[in-house]
Image (cartoon, rainbow over all chains, first blue to last red; front, top):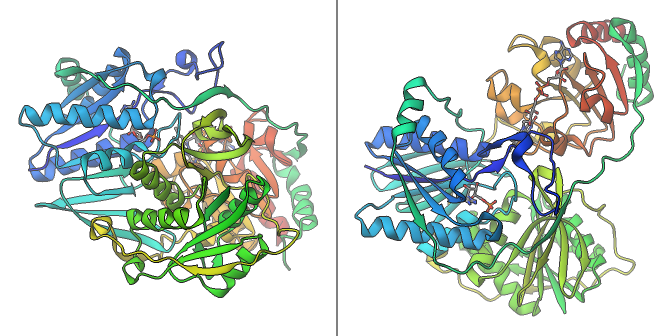
Length: 257
Length: 318
Ligand SMILES: Cc1cc2nc3c(=O)[nH]c(=O)nc-3n(C[C@H](O)[C@H](O)[C@H](O)COP(=O)(O)OP(=O)(O)OC[C@H]3O[C@@H](n4cnc5c(N)ncnc54)[C@H](O)[C@@H]3O)c2cc1C
Ligand SMILES: Nc1ncnc2c1ncn2[C@@H]1O[C@H](COP(=O)(O)O)[C@@H](O)[C@H]1O
């Protein structure tokens, strides 16, 4: 039986237009809405697979403001068992702080008799993209960590994890307890069912605090770069444009024969 | 002051992003330039380092390093940092570069800035780095005894130094701690169908997105890619709907391509997709919507239904 903890972050929907807050310090998510990143959705899907195959459970954890409970409940709606909200001001936190807050929450759970054989995170957060929380957490816990995982299986005390490397699919076999960071692509994210949504509304989400003093992220300001000016040459419309397009292909010397 | 750059080896050469990182590190003028290679440094890699102006190439020959283990690589980078008395360590912003530097950051309790595109000042170190998949830039201060940063791909053009460096090869004396091998690659399953090298190396990529309409909508795309001797690349919508395999995905969470021509059909051109194709030399968009970002950002466009335009192009090509 493997209990899995998945860390998710509430982020402004990164597929929407990026609008900054007036002070230029944050992405304003009020227009695009909030979500979790695709990597974390994949992590939840993998965690649910592990829980199903080993008879374990999945806890979704988020460090942030009270609203992050929405992302926790979204995880429960697609198969997680329960949730933990570590309440903290997300604007003050850097990746080392988030790792410390997660480690502390794990200690609290451990004291309550709940140990997680596997902790899954996204490879990188969709907004800040620090690429660090999972690795820093592993060192705080003294556990091995594999990054960029796309599929995984647990058999007893060993996890087999796969991710894409420069020469092919890299396979790791790691003794549990362990940490892994997930990249989307190896598993389809789950969509909530009606039953799942009902369950998510009622599921228990424990609220914890974090007592550490944050070192922060070092952010001074955000800017949205202006797209470079561009003049597109419209070759034409519909099938009538085919000869013109082929002429451009020949000009670019990409047509042989 | 000195700077150490982690150099990744690809087909016996310093990888493109590593050469970009070397160029960038040199341009900072922050003192001696050092390179670190995990494993014995091949002669061609030493030559690449020499061209880039590297004074010393640190190499680590411990046989335990034959299979990739991020923690062990981090131990090597730390050893090189000590040998070079580095105050700045730079790695390519690849999967490995980011992972290894995150290990160094965690082990040494240091700050790390990922996907840096520019350095504004050296003391204090203030960088510009890509966030939100490249849609925004963050100005950040990186403090600490040693500063760690990874370079976003294609932020600079790799170039040779005015005067080549000595590129003296210096073996690092270190023994890998078994703790650092707890998470080590046990085997690599070589790519066959999942091969992305064809896509990332292709001179021509024919791209297709949701506009393909379904798994059966790629016939003309496949034929055109074949006719032009290129590869097929797709958007994430296409892979998440299961129309095509993930290894064909172009973008932030797929492959980054830099072909001579990218012919993007039925792709809207989201930030995340653009992150993977922006380095294409010429972009031609085929789209029903004249206002799609892919169209407004392209060099050329055809406004129309890809299911009509592509067969007509194939016929025209004969
Ligand atoms: C963290 C994260 C990572 C992501 N990574 C990636 C990534 O790596 N790669 C990626 O691609 N996306 C990625 N995305 C998703 C991205 O935001 C977009 O959702 C996606 O790229 C859109 O795919 P699309 O252009 O095929 O579909 P759509 O946005 O739906 O666009 C379809 C386009 O086709 C046109 N069209 C429709 N029918 C036709 C027709 N018959 N002929 C011609 N044109 C037609 C439409 O006008 C439209 O412009 C990521 C998102 C997130 C949040
Ligand atoms: N505030 C947070 N709460 C919970 N998990 C987080 C938080 N920030 C980051 N993470 C996790 O850490 C991963 C990597 O984040 P980062 O290192 O910031 O790129 C994310 O994909 C999340 O899984």
